[in-house]
Picture 1: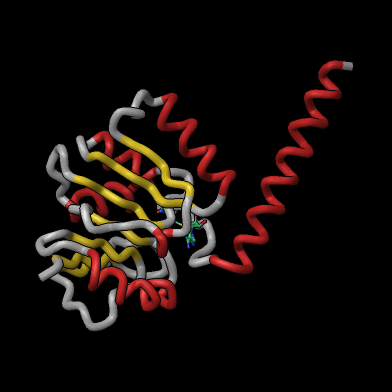
Picture 2: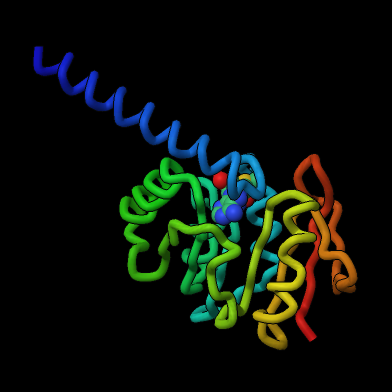
Length: 178
Ligand SMILES: C[S@@+](CC[C@H](N)C(=O)[O-])C[C@H]1O[C@@H](n2cnc3c(N)ncnc32)[C@H](O)[C@@H]1O
């Protein structure tokens, strides 16, 4: 009997979270959840060349794999994620891996998050979303910070490196803010 009750409560909680997420999808959505393959995660980390202590942001952090990879390299790593289910899931992994001192997930729309302290920013979104982010990045990102555009580029910015080893949707673009 108790198993039934627990099962029902968990089921209802899941449906409520998914419905909340759907509402977000129609209003503020910037990209669907498509996780990066581990080999691409490694390549993004190599390109970003994180120095321990640097501040890292992944815009649209999904299940937190880039945030966790950056924290394991010594960054103070932040993921920004709008989907409450993935926020919960990635926070759980951060806790289980003992990375809570170095990694955190901000449950917010990334258009509303201040990026002025970032040393490294990664974005695996959509071309239209990157286009909408251009003005914010131009205004907030500090000089010398690195940005990695995953599959989609930053219009008008000159990449310092383009690597074809990205996901199926496109290459990896490394930028340095001037
Ligand atoms: C393509 S996935 C990338 C996931 C992860 N960064 C990775 O590389 O595996 C894009 C993520 O961005 C999130 N997202 C989309 N629009 C957002 C917004 N405006 N603010 C915060 N997160 C957003 C989605 O929920 C999704 O998890």
